[in-house]
Amino acid sequence: MNYFLRKPWRGRIGALLGILLMGLSLRPAVSVVSPLLGTMGPELGFDAVTIGALAMLPPLVFAAAGLGTPALIRRAGLERVLVASVLLAVAGQLGRAAVGGVWPFLILSALVMAGYGMGNVVLPPLVKKYFPDRLGLVTAGYVTLLAVGTAASPQLAVPVARLSDWRLSIAVWALMSALVLLPWAVQLLRDRQAKRAGDDGGAAHAASAAGTPAKAGGAAAVPSAPKPVQHLNPWKSPVAWGLAIFLAGNSAQTYVYFTWLPPYLAGQGLDVAAAGSALAYFAILGLPVSLLVPLVVPRMRNPIFAILVFTACWIGGHLGLYLAPMAGTWWWVTFAGLGQGTFATALLMMNLRSRTTHGASVLAGFSQGIGYAGAGLAPLLFGIVRDATGSWTASFALLAGCVLVMLAGAVMINKRRYIEDTPAAHPKNRPVDAAVGSKIGR
Image (cartoon, rainbow, N blue to C red):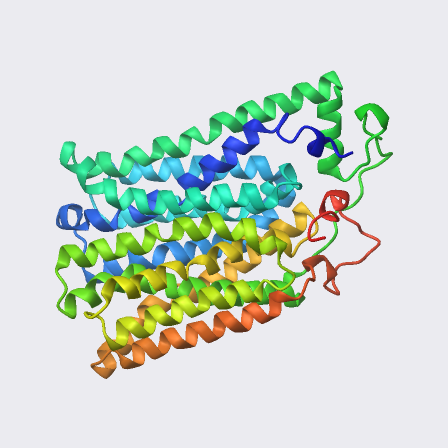
């Protein structure tokens, strides 16, 4: 019996805590700034142009990090890249809390986004490496905490600023990022000690992570030479393109809501404070679906059925907000908020449509790189179309287009096939963790 199945958490507690804390810390630094712009904006010199640039930073930097991080992982390894990403994020958060001008603030914010963009890519393969037998459960945990962090920081931003100032309100989230390093330090120390001691847990863990079968009693069969990592070209992979298209359509809708929902509702006559609460409510609704999706979707032969349910929620939200924004505002926001289950599905598919940790890192990097690049343009186009036409009709038609894009990607990733099946992946170059990956998706 597999070592992880006999003793599910032994030797992996540090990795589990590290993954969960990383999920919790990925979004607060992004979502904490917007509520503070009324205070910090005049002090730093923000105007319409720089606020627009700030809004576009997360998806565009996430896209660049997504495309570049897999190469870093191949050279340095998952854990080292994770440590580097956390250090970048901490340095950027502390630095921008101390600056006195808008452009240094934007540059350091880009540094923060680069760190968290690397973290976005690293998390799915880390889950596959350390928890190949608990993909759904661990993914549910970190995706749920990601939603918690997204909703918590804008709610706490102003109260913390009132206790001190906006600089502390921004800098305090660097502490959460730094805490990520503690459990990973414990995990890596444990792994190193286990390898030196040659105990059955460390050997089995190393064997499982490397795709090497363990001998009776837990000792790993040491290969004569490491097997080469399989070359994967995501640009030629239908699965990679499908997931990128799916993520682009999903994230485009989400970014439009985070950017435009409060001003749109306020313009329709809703109280400004209530419009802000509607956005917070939208973000909070990501919690239940983030917990549910990774526990249910892996059991489905055709995940597209779950995607269609969430898509119906998106459509209901869009139509309601366009046709009757004041008649059933909270119902429409509820529908759209539940539609965020498509994002949790996208994160899960990075593991369900790859066999290996290397494949998961390549798939995560490519899909997020292309997906966030496309999604980053949506809020800008939404506003441009509104100004050009003088009404919201064409802008909401743009959201309908995003739904169609998302569904096109969903069709491409529904079939159970893997990025390792791309023609550029040569069977003779089997990756070092193929044994672990072969268990996934069965």
